[in-house]
Length: 218
Image 1 (cartoon, helix red, strand yellow):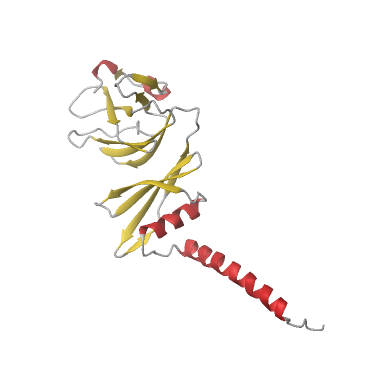
Image 2: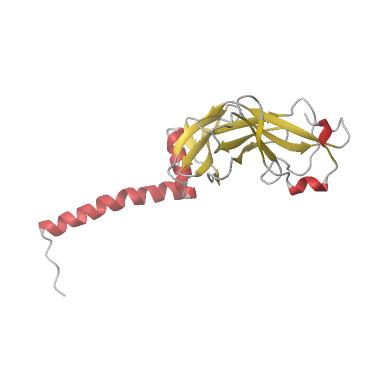
């Protein structure tokens, strides 16, 4: 078979194809090998690429100095994601991503960002401009008390339309049990600038299985 003559035009097309393919191959290699990055933003981009999200616009960043972890809140259209990246020595590695869709017809939407035995952070996205503060409620039980109690955590500091609600029960010893502050187990409330309740999500069905002392809400 006669060999094709390598003309300048054919050589140019081959060079263009190689120039396009090389960055793609490098990106796939980086994701496959989970290579470290010099900056947390590089690890953030790799995390989004691995999960097929975005790339999204960074809304805010949460720093956990105890574990050298950055958690980014990123937005892509109606979707919001929590992306965690962590540092090992001078380099950064990609982490996990969780996302939630915030439909305009939903006044409040929540996403667990950080969850520990006695503390955590919940992202609440507001689609109602009248909502100036938000509250997250979920049942907890302690060794020092009898029965389930309704615990509340509130935030009035928004970044754009995103509220970060943090809770800390380190002052009391919580009994291990079902993760009531996970999705589907907590209730959201929205208040206007005068403190009036203008939105409340339905009581989760999971609450009906427990003798919750609603009159002792904190």
